[in-house]
Image (cartoon, rainbow, N blue to C red):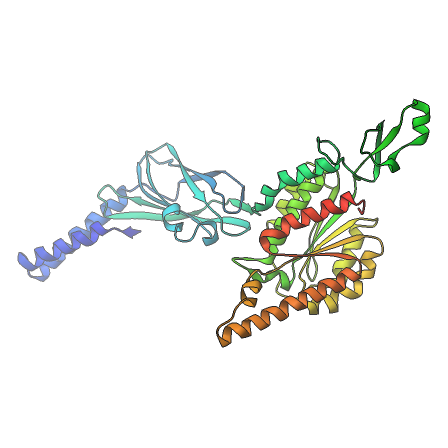
Length: 436
C-alpha cells in the first residue's frame, strides 16, 4: 500500500475542521475515521497488481553508448481499470548518469481485460550484460488517496558490446589492402609473395619478375604477378591482467586494446586470413577459434563484451603456453599488453624465444598521452618533478621497446586514439613484405 499527497492534504483539512468546528476527541475520531474509510474504499476499488501479467521484447545487444529499446507488455486480467505508475528498474550502469529516474518511470492507464506496451530506452555506460530488476506497479484508486503496490520479476538481458570506434579507419585500410592486392588502378602495382598470374611486360615492370620460359613459349615478354599471402593465421592475444586496468583518459587500457583488436580482425578477415582470439591473465578468460570469415567479427565482439581487467599480475608462462597451443604452426601473434619494464623483463622476456622461433610477433601497447603533457611541464617545483618522472617513464618504455625489438618483436607504443590504426598499418606492412 502507498499513500499519496491527496491523503496528506485531506488529513490537513480534517485538522482544520477539528480545530475550528469540533475541538474535541469526538471531532478527532470522526475526522480520522472519515479519512481511514476513504483510504480503505480507495484501496478496495483500485485494480489489483498481483495478478498482472508481463512480457518483454526488444533489443538484446547494443553497441556501448548507443540506445537500446526494451518493450514491456502489461496485461490487466481483472475487470477493474488500472491507473497508476510503472517503474522498470535496471542496474545504474544501464542509463546515462542522471537519467535513470525519468527513463525508468512510466504513467499507465490500462482498462480491464486489455494490455499496453511500455517502451524503456536504455543507454549502457559500460560493457557487459545488463539485467532487468523488478517491475514495480502502483495502482491508484479512483479517489487518488491510496494505491496498491507490488513488484514482479520480468527477466531480460541487454549485452553492451565494445563500441568499435576505430571502424572509421577501416575504409582507408581496405583501400591500401586492395592496392597491395593489385586490384585498383594505382601507379605502383601491388606486391606480394604468392604467385598470381602471368601478363605481358609493361614499361616500368621489375625485370626480376620476367618469366623467361613463359616468354619463350609466348614469343612475348611475360612477367609474373604477385599477390599478398592469403589464408594466414593470426592470433590476437589480450593481456587482461593488472596493467590493462590502468586508466588512460576516461577508460581503462583494455578498452583501447579491444578496439585495436576489432579493427585488425575486420581488416585481416577481408584480406582472407584466419583470426583467433585469446584473452588471458592468471588463467584463460576467453578463447575464440575456428570461426568462419563472416562469423569471426561478431564472435569476437560478443566474447569481448564481458571482459574486465583483473587486478593481479598476468601469468606470462601460462599465457605463452596457451598461445602456442592455439597456434601450432607459423602464425602472426599480436600481443596487446603493457610496456612496463618489470613485467616485461621478469615475465615476457625469458619466454620470447619460444614465440619468435616459429612465429612473427607484434607487441602493441597503449601509451598514456598525459606523459607528454607532464614531460613539458615547467615553472614550479611540482611541474619540474612531474616532468622528470614522466621523462623517466618514457625512457623506460623506449628501452623496453628497443630490447624487445632486438629479440625480433615488432613493437608499437601509441596512445588510445592511434593504437588501432597503427596496428592495422603494421599488419599491412608485414603483409606487403611477405613476413606473415
